[in-house]
Image (cartoon, rainbow, N blue to C red):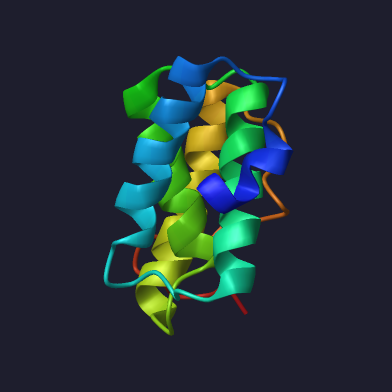
Length: 114
């Protein structure tokens, strides 16, 4: 995330940046994260967006950031990805996160309605 300081410099306090850095490092270290430059930069922007929208509790932010990353920046994991998108949608709705990126409502068993 240090490469992406242009997204936060002058806007966030050093302790806030440190917390975002810890979450960023933990999430991109997950084996399912598709570790490309584009994905890292997009995830950094999403993490900052969540924080700026009011998700400032570190545990909640880490949880939502993980769901976001798994939904949008994971390697090919169709079932897990669908589940993450649903959980992200539900969590953002519950926490008032607003933009759910039009995540589809998928039943828990993964079956789609015809």
